[in-house]
Image (cartoon, rainbow, N blue to C red; front, side):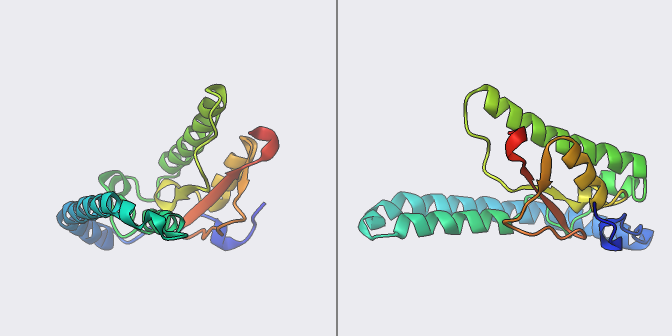
Length: 173
């Protein structure tokens, strides 16, 4: 278990800061989503033309790695935004406990559904962002996940102030 203070609950953010970040999120988030849509269309167009470069050794593998890195770097809900539920439930441990439990249960359900369908599970690591566990702490997510057959990912490290990265234990898969 994690007894380090950094894995515990994060302190509540000041209301004035939350309201300012919420207002900026309402104004900037649609532009962010438009930028992501434009980037997707550009990458799709490039991928269609990139068939020409398929003869270059390693191009396809490198292009795939670049897309994966971009997917991890560009989030649909960036860390800087504050949503309405976050604004309303800042510091509410029951709300964040339910969110963390729901996130881990959803990841477990996806794994079990893939196994029942005879398909490989979605590629990991599986991320639980801070917006799902802020008031209960990253340690709570790890305890909940371990009870359902998960552990911390060793491929990419977790940052308890930002994200918890999980992997499915082999015997639970």
